[in-house]
Image (cartoon, rainbow, N blue to C red):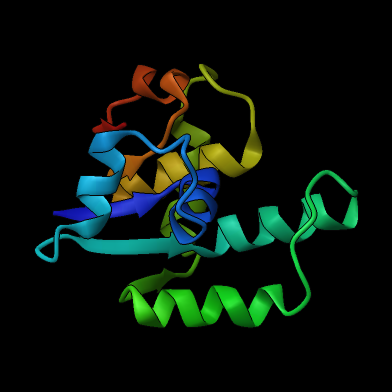
Length: 128
């Protein structure tokens, strides 16, 4: 199964955060799953850091890269088709980063690993 990691899910996974559900941990640990981290999530992390909304330790960018390699998490760039899909989405959710993730999950036929139950309003399979 192809699984796109929501930004918070990725950060919680690499820090083994207690907020992760059992299903999230099992999905992450199942070697048959192909995991993906979106450029939209990296962009969201950078925006939130620049606004002071989140704080990550020194070397955070390298840590993210190393964790992706160690956990065999694939990079998912934002494609034109993902942007076009955003236009088609109803406004169940207004967060622009989440809307790109939803569009990517739809276009790439992926499940979305996210705690945000509002994402279930879309035609995607949400895991949590």
